[in-house]
Image (cartoon, rainbow, N blue to C red):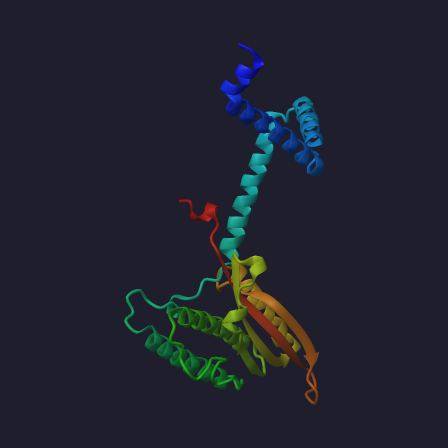
Length: 259
């Protein structure tokens, strides 16, 4: 059988093989012109060789690092538990409450009456609304948030009365939209700003009471986000404290969730 016969019988197959070889050569040329894959392959082989010769990390070093990580996780869980704000039971909507809005209204009214009456007995002026809006919230999340705010207000006002301040001129609850940032999505804080006027001793006693009360486990933890002092014009010896207290709501970590 000569070449002509082979060509006639296997022409289609020969053409397919030739086309495939041509496509392979062209493809390699295009790839090589756009991506220097051979350099990447050589570099990867070199890196693999270096890693294979690297000194193995001793088991005791790995164990020490694991123990350190475990200790840090435990420390974080303990700090988060301490700093997480725990409102009093009266400021938590009871399970099965059929009308949370009505519950909030009653709690607000009772707290307002008790605090203002206690302040008046000591001749201390307090904002009548305690920083809350006239209209009671309707959404469950906002009701819970306002109850936490009311708990913070009560804690600071009681400490202020006990410290013997002259007056509380401002109570301002931060809007809910500002309570959680994208940079720290695990942490939400509810800030309440107070403007309090009193003598040096009463202001000092107030701040110490807010800090030490939580440290002694006698009150919920409040983070002091801001504290600024300035003298009051026309009132000798009086200081104005611009104080922002924050109730921290910290998401539970996996370690805390594990029983």
